[in-house]
Length: 250
Ligand code: MF3
Ligand code: CO
Image (cartoon, rainbow, N blue to C red; front, side, top):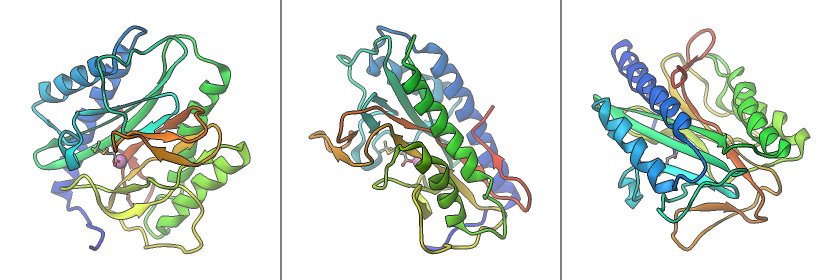
C-alpha cells in the first residue's frame, strides 16, 4: 500500500489525537511509583484514554489483551500488564500507548526510571530519546525515509548499544500501522521520498547490551536475549516542508 498523505482536515484530527495521547502519557508517567503493579499502570492508562472520550487502539489489536504495553527492564516492548508484576525501585519501565480520536490513531512510548536508577540505566533512557531527535532532524519533505533510519543508527552505534531490528516504526493515520515500515538500523537504500502530510511513528528500541531479542511464551513480550535493560522512545510526527511537527509532545 502507498504511503498516505493527510489532508489539512486529517492533520487537524491527527494533531488532536496526538495531543490527547501526550496528556495521557504525562499523567501516566507521573503516577508511576514503587509498589505499583503493571496491571495498575494499564488500568489507569485505559481510564485516562477513555476520560478524553477516546478508544485505546492497542486493546485487542491482533489479540493484545491490554490498553498499555508495560515492559520492565530487559523487556523491550509489548509487555503484558500483570497484577503480580510489581514495579520496584531501580527498575526501568517502558510505557507504549495509543488511542483513536474521531477515527485517527496516535502512538507514543516513553521509558521511565522507578525511584533511583543506575547511571547506566539513565544513560540508556536518555540516549534512546536522543536517537529519536537525531533521526527526526532528517525528517523533512525532500529527504528520504531511510535518512531517518541511518541518522538513528549513526547516533546509537558509537555508544555500543544494540539496536533492535525485529521491530520498526511505521506510518499511522486511520490505522495504527500504515506503510511505510521505518527501521532504526542502517539501510543501504534511500527508501521512499518524504512528503509533507505524511504522519509517521518513529520509535527506536535500544538494548544496553546485544541487539538480539526473543519472544516469551505469551507470544507478545519481546525481551533482550542477554537479559540486559532495554529502552523505547516513540512519537507520532508530521512531515512538513520545514521542521517536522512532533505531535505527541505536550
Ligand atoms: N506501539 C506499538 C507499535 O508501534 C503497538 C503495540 S502493539 C499492540 O507497533 F498490540 F500492543 F497494540
Ligand atoms: Co508504534
